[in-house]
Amino acid sequence: MSQTTGRSRVGVLAWCASAFAVLASPPALALQAGDLADDVRRLIAAKKFGEARVGVSMMDGASGAVLAAHRADEAFIPASNMKLLTSGAALLILGPDFAFRTELVSDGERLIFRGSGDPSLADPSILEKMTPRLTVGDMLDAMVGAATKANITRASELVIDDRVFDRELVHPMWPADQLTRGYCAQVSGVNFHANVLHVFPAPSPSGPGHSAVYTLQPEAPWLRFEVRARTVAEGSNSPWLTRDADGSRFVLRGDVRHRSLAPIEVTVHDPAMFLGNLLAERLERGGVTLGSNPRVRLAQPDETLSAGAVLAMISTPLAEVLKRCNADSANLYAEAMLKRIGHDVTHEPGSWKNGAAVVRMLLTERIGADAAASTVISDGSGMSRGNAVTPSTMTRWVRSISLDKAVGQAFRDSMAEIGEGTLRRRFQGAKLTNRLQAKSGYLNGVRCLSGTVTHEASGRFVTFSVLVNNIRTDEQHRDTLQLHEDIVRLADRWLNARVTADGPAMGG
Image 1 (tube, one colour):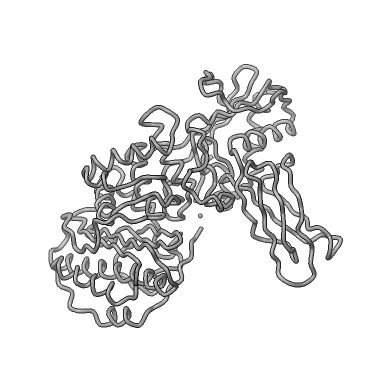
Image 2: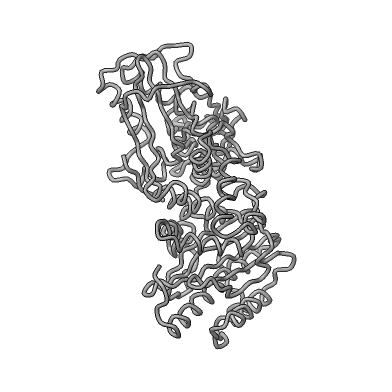
């Protein structure tokens, strides 16, 4: 089964009068880098950043010349701009033709579900865009159907082999109070339904005052759900969900006035075993009897499992994973790629540690030991505040990957463009003449944007990185979003002027 892609983090754009004045009557744009650097300094000075730190780097893709630099060699928290390091490394290590391959196999009397770290398996954002549209139940039924078609009516056990990755499912530097939210989903060698549950609350048919009801996707009847939410006739519709740390109990709370069309999302604990229980329940419903004590288990760390006979296989091209990672900023996808490159290089279970070591190795090889030394790689998605990267490293990295003939186009095409992904509601009034492909980044107090602006006829491009930390106020937040747009406009205008002066200089 091939899968295709779709979460937008909405930025609130606000035009500040001083910045508009700068851009409405721009100075004559000279072609010298120093003049462009002056423009960047004026744009920053026109805003009220206060204690916020602003780092900017702009580089000519053709020559590698630095066009502008403001605190460009200082380390910043990159938020989701970290995904550009991770995705570029994944392309270099795995190759553009790589595909995650997940298998259900028969091994004598037992069934084995062998994971590859694929983050997209039954991702609801992908399923709803498939033609024909599939549900999570359809995918489970397809696997059960493959087993029954092979005349399997009994299996001694179902073994879930998740050992492509280690079993450190939660990064130690992720916010402890947000681990039940989808963007902090656990990372496993077997991922399913983005490692989240979707809960749809509804009012009780018995009317106000009675406990609310709900439906669940995927259906997991063995989970312990308590309903403390009540049906109301008026007031706000405000259901919410909690779960115990070990995933043993979920509690639905709040007031339910009407049926929810959008789900409440909550992460599952131990995704591999969650998938194992889902599949076991479907197998038995489909006529395949499983043994007991236990009927489902994880593979032991040093256990030898045969290749077996493949009953069902799901393949997901890396290009689709990259797009969901960068354009949609799906954290699970970045973490899965980081662990997967750690596995492929070391031949050990992929981990945050060995994945980070691979990225540092590539930074050294591609842009120098200085870049590797100044970069801290804590996780792959940027959720950790332990990450640190300089704007200069970011632009040099993006340029290096973009120029790579084997992977450059796939790398740039994985980023969001105006009107899609995390840029769906940004840059709407920018009126750019060149192609913007960029990755946004957001954490509390952090706003970043890095990417490329490309003159498509000539292939010439500018790489840029704008990293802002320590944002304290709503005004600074708005000014940061405006600065992103201002810097991109500068790159757009410089590129037009440079191509006019020089003519086509290079291919993409």
